[in-house]
Length: 102
Image (cartoon, rainbow, N blue to C red; front, side, top):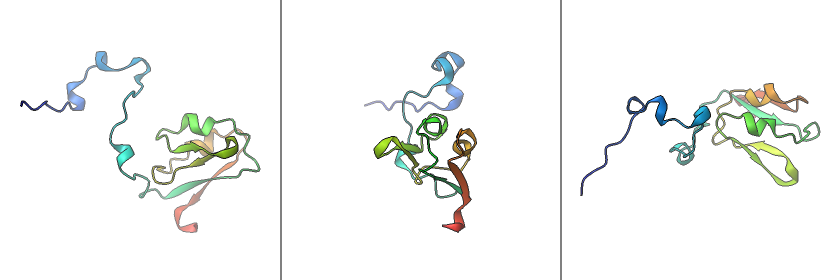
């Protein structure tokens, strides 16, 4: 049985990409906990949260998950602490705190 050659980034051209450069297939990041090296973590204040979902939409790692009541929380196994969620939150419900504080 012939082995299929693995494709690398150098094997792709712009014609191989989806419109908008959207990733349609998950890679292997979901199999590995990638949030262990962050220096800050997001903390969401549910009292302030308007449940708009911007944090969920803009998280580049898909590390924000929807929980009961329509609220959102970071999945700290995958969150890398970039702070995009805190910056995009229109009601300042997300605060980035140093990892050592918890």
